Image (tube, rainbow, N blue to C red; front, side, top):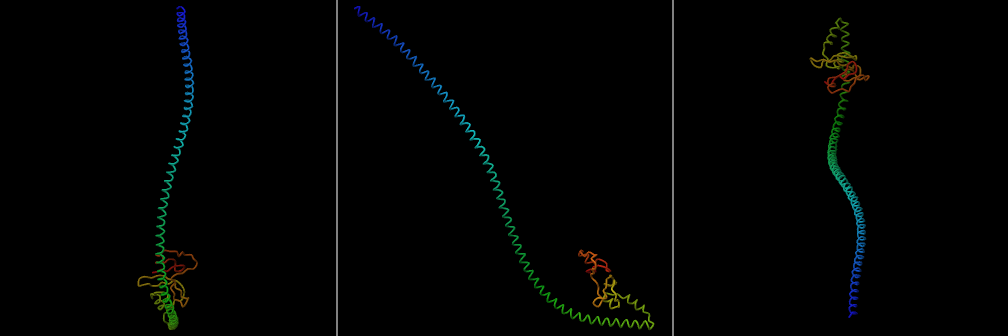
Length: 270
């Protein structure tokens, strides 16, 4: 019975010691597990912080790269806008050039049309002028023929006039010898109104010089008469000798006459 009690006590003692050791072992195990877990947690936190830092660096790089890309995109957009504006301006210029080319082509066509019309008018005018020249040539030939006949008749008339003048001078000479005052004849010649140089020549004035002719009953004019060339009696309309007088004049001056009848002059159309 004592042995049994002792065994029970021993068993109780062993159970208590075993419980205590088990508790200690369990506590120590829990402590070790907690330390391990803390180390593992610390390690995980350290790794997490390192990964976070790396991720932050990567994010920063990505943001920087994104910013650079956005800047490049903005620059490309601005360049594209400039190119679009330049393209629009060039398109407008090309449109204006097309419009100008159209206007120039239209003007060229109008000019060609006018030129063709003018050429056609010139051809018609040329034909008319050629026809007119042909008619005038015929008229000129006829006039030349008539002039030839008139020249022959004029030569005969001049001979008759010369014969009459010789006869008159002979009569004047006979009258002078017979006691007739010749001044009366001279005065009568001076009082006579001569229409041109031919009348003066027929009246016995045979020297070149300036004479007064009567255009009508009230109007007189001084003219230069050539009494020695081609039978005499020629009224000089134009005389040019040394170029001292400028003949580049207006129509009015040619109408009224200019210069001096004793030198270079134009007598006048009227």
